[in-house]
Amino acid sequence: MSYDIKITKVEKSKVSEFDFDNIPLGRAFTDHMFVCEYANGQWNNPRIEPLKQISMHPATMALHYGQAIFEGMKATLDINGNAMLFRPEKNAHRLNFSADRLGMPRFPEELFVEGLKKLVDIDRSWIPTQKSSALYLRPFMYADEPFIGMRAATHYKFIIIASPSGPIYNKRIKLYAETEYVRAVKGGTGEAKAAGNYAAAILPTEIAKSKGYDQVLWLDAHEFKYIQEAGTMNVFFRINDEFITPSLDGAILNGISRLSTIELLRDKGYKVTERLVSMDEIIEASNNGTLQEAFGCGTAVGVAMIEEIGYRNQTIHVSKDNPVGKMVMETIVGLRAATIEDKYGWIVSV
Ligand SMILES: Cc1ncc(COP(=O)(O)O)c(C=O)c1O
Image (cartoon, rainbow, N blue to C red; front, side):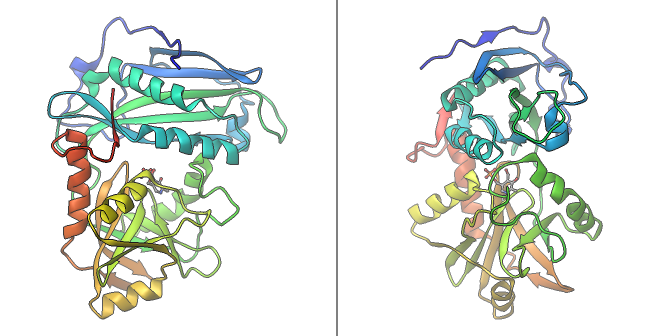
C-alpha cells in the first residue's frame, strides 16, 4: 500500500552551515520532520514539512499523564553513497507494542517505514559520512488532547525528527549495578519504549555518572539479584564460550540490536542462551577467570565493550579482549556500509 505523504520543503537547507566534524550530540536537527495526527479514530494528513516548534495547550495530556512513546534508529550511507535503514520494520512493530501497553492507538507500520524513508531521502545530505556517525531518527507519539482527567486521550501526534550523530563512546565503559532504584518491573511498562521509563532512570543515572560510571546496570526489582539491561543497551556476557543475555521478562526492552546480536552469534556458530543471569554468577566468573567478554548493544551506542561493573562496593573486572563483541560491531557496520553481503535481509534501502 502506498500512502499519500504531502511534502513541503524548506526554502533553503541549513546543511551547508553544519559542521560535520564537530557534531553536537542530540542538539542538531535536519531541515524537515514527518508529522501525522490522530483524531476521530484514525491517522490523518501524513506529511513532511519544515522542522518547526510545536505548540501545545497547557492541558496537553502527554504532559500530565505521560502517554508518550518513542523509537530510535539510524540511517547511514553505504560505500556507494546509498542511504539505508537497519530493520526499520522492527521499530515500527515495537512502537505498536509500546502503543498497546500505554493505551495509545497503533500507527500503520507501512506508513511508519514509508515516512522514515521519505524523510531520510529528503534530508539525505544530513547523513554524516564520518566513522561511527549516522543520522539518528527519532519517531515518537504523544497524547496531544487538552484534557484534565485520567483516561486514554482521543487525539495524538506522531512525528519523526532526525539528528546527525557522532560516536557516543570511544572507550570501554563502566556500569553501575543499581541496588536502590529500579527501572521497571514485570507488569509495568519496562518492555515498552515509554518516555516515563527514562524519567525513572534519570536520577539514578546522574548518581552513577557522579560516581564515575557511564550507565546504570539495572537489576530485578525484587531482589536486586538478576541483571536486566543497561541504561540504553541490552547486555551480553561470554562465560566459558557461552553467550548469555537476560531473557525478556516483561520488564526489559526488546532491543533490535539484542535480537540481531543473538541471530548473528548463532549464525556464526556461537552458543547463545537467553536466561536469568545473576550478579553472583558474573562475580564468580570474573573471579575464576571464565568471564571472557561483556558488552552492551543498542542503536545509539552500537556495541559498547564493558570494562568493569560496580556492585555493592566491589568492582567486577572484565577481560580486556572483546574479539566476539568486536566481530558483532564490525559485522553490523559492514552490513550497513554494504561491505558485507546482507544475507540476513536486515538492510532496507531508502
Ligand atoms: C532501555 C534500553 N534498552 C535497550 C536499548 C537497545 O535497543 P535497540 O537495540 O532497539 O536500540 C535501548 C535503546 O533503544 C534502550 O533505551
